[in-house]
Length: 68
Figure 1 (cartoon, rainbow, N blue to C red):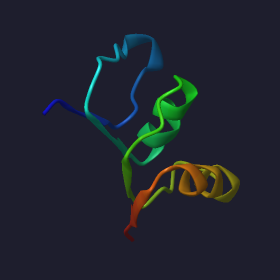
Figure 2 (figure 1 turned 60 degrees about the horizontal axis):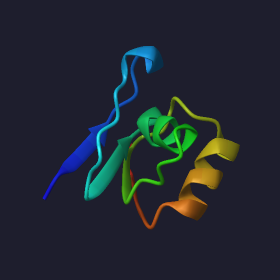
Figure 3 (figure 1 turned 180 degrees about the horizontal axis):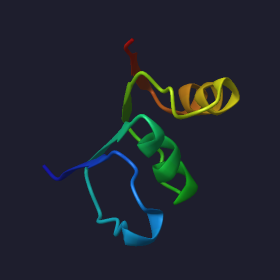
């Protein structure tokens, strides 16, 4: 199984590979979505996204683990 964990970073340096499972960490979930990839899971405190962005992500991503 090929798993990709995206924790954001400089978007121009990110090269996405085909994966069986995607995990977005904090803003990385938003980065994946911006590239047309809906993560299977997102995890983090999400202090780097707005509440509106978090709500959009949570509506699309099936597994959400928000920690403080």
